[in-house]
Length: 161
Image 1 (cartoon, one colour):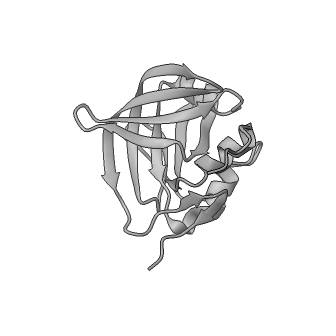
Image 2 (cartoon, rainbow, N blue to C red):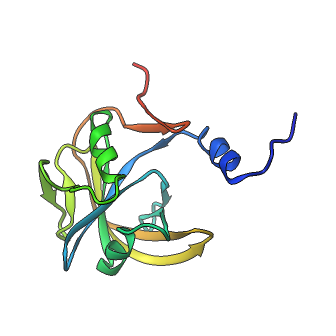
């Protein structure tokens, strides 16, 4: 096997071979709702119920969500590609023109998401150019049946029927 040149781009390309789901991370902040798309999301523990995600230090949204102390996760379905693109765009009006519910903690949850979790931040660890966030899920629900929106090799994808 040939050794690829070890660049940031080649590292990203290799990691892109790992298919991920996509979630929205949204919080009600003192300045209104703030949210971002994330594919670096995973379950950590069932007891206690913990999840983790990574947020880039370069994110302009994450600091507001962090200050809120908690957030809601909406698990995106295959019909949410445009929503995801909007939430991944800097300066976009992310919450306009969509049907939102509030989690028990008051955070925005996309009404037609596959499921949601209401989370309280437990710990944040520095991790290279990101922060590794571990949060406790305090409420959750599976809300809509459907297939997930997934990301693979730099593209949105859908599961085969």
